[in-house]
Length: 398
Ligand SMILES: *Cc1c(COP(=O)(O)O)cnc(C)c1O
Image (cartoon, rainbow, N blue to C red; front, top):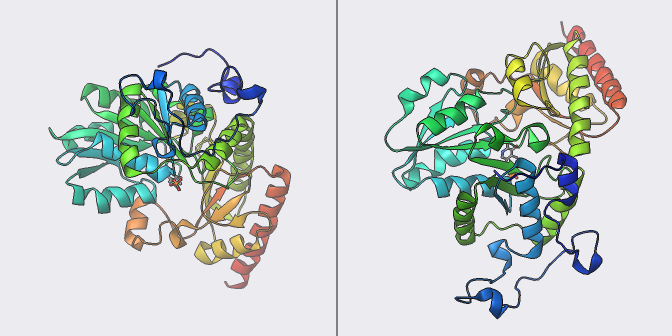
């Protein structure tokens, strides 16, 4: 790990910035150029060295952003990619080759699960699904071909926090590469490399950029792994567009203030909902009643702003509730300035059978909220009127 003793918010603003500033510019300029004149002194042994080209993710904008991201999680290096899925798939395809196997947490992000189920088998990569909560059960899934273990900091949409400390320890003990999707926690709330994880992956489309206006991804870790993943990305082509890199760089500077505010709003809203008679259950790791609360409290500096609720009136009440909301927008995605809502059984998890959803604990009346940066009093007043309107429907129909 690299050590940068500055505070997290100071790193957000200053880490990775060019010294001296480019023509004095306070904001890192946008370098839109695809290619860069080769400096023969820098090229040294051959023209390949020192070549700067957009797809190689090594323009000045990429360099600054990658150094900043590495500093935020205490990694030696980082790589930015065209999307979260580009970071996930390129990292997995670097760590795993044909014949290898990976231990994967059961309830992963839909795109990741689809990649592991649908694509990896064609490539000769085997997946063994594990209960990431039950460390005692992992060893029996190990084979001589197992190379990696893959988990998420918090799962979607139930916000479960698995035994992350044990995942990192188990990986070390068995020579596996430990990989974690840290999108829901963000480096404000959790820095997995400090716990011993090898690779921390983000969809920067979510909290990292935070404004719902670009797709981007990142992977942070040791320089040798990041070098190999970069080499693979150079072939697969999922580089980050310079304009998106510029916007991500800008979005990151406010990550600390945004996420700390969202942590507070998420907690207030979770508490409000948990006390409401129209709500059967709230899934938020910040609530003492959440099964993983003690673990989350020990690992995280905050619990984020993604939560889900089960409405007492079933799926009809859930749909009525969502359509009665005036501030939250009915849309997928999370982590941005706008509060968004959706019903997983009807959207992100609609391709699963009702039995599969039930086995994952995703009920039809479950509604997910990603709390944004609006005034929390306004959000609570809006939730209140929407719950009142769906309760009158529930009582009218009984
Ligand atoms: C959105 C998301 C992804 C995929 O990211 P994209 O930027 O949409 O490719 C991966 N993991 C998690 C946890 C996500 O929320």
